[in-house]
Image 1 (spheres, helix red, strand yellow):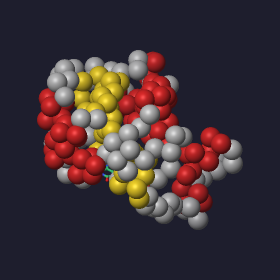
Image 2 (cartoon, protein in one colour):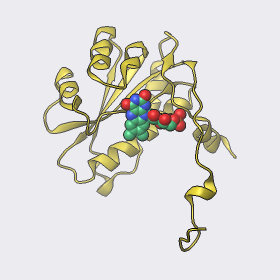
Image 3 (cartoon, helix red, strand yellow):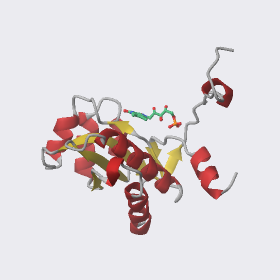
Image 4 (cartoon, protein in one colour):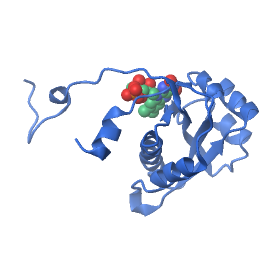
Length: 168
Ligand SMILES: Cc1cc2nc3c(=O)[nH]c(=O)nc-3n(C[C@H](O)[C@H](O)[C@H](O)COP(=O)(O)O)c2cc1C
């Protein structure tokens, strides 16, 4: 374990937030972490919205099915991908995780909320006046944690194989 792996392993989804605002420098640093993600052919086909306006947060929350808690977040990052890039989904998922970890490094909790494949994806794009060449990939509501839920993870032995796979 080192500082980097401790941050990664201690991350949990946070869906209840304190009302405190997050320092601008932390937001900027986390966004820079997102931009540091790998992307196919280094196309970086992402676009990040930063929403703090309470009315807008409420509207976004209302449009989602499993993201109603967005209304209580200090900020919500909205990750869009440029559709013409073949691997925009993989690229923007990598960026989303980097963003989440970058926030967690400042003690800011967040939760990945589904965007891609959701019927509300286009409604959220239009709500934020984002051009049609982009599509919603993920939403990341964030804030200082008021409550953290810890999910059990599969054991390493159950999800790894060395050299070649065997059933036992
Ligand atoms: C692609 C994706 C979509 C998700 N969508 C939602 C969602 O819509 N609402 C939600 O509350 N959590 C959502 N999550 C968070 C997962 O529920 C959470 O990561 C999982 O339960 C494991 O918990 P942990 O993040 O604390 O390890 C999503 C996660 C991923 C990767």
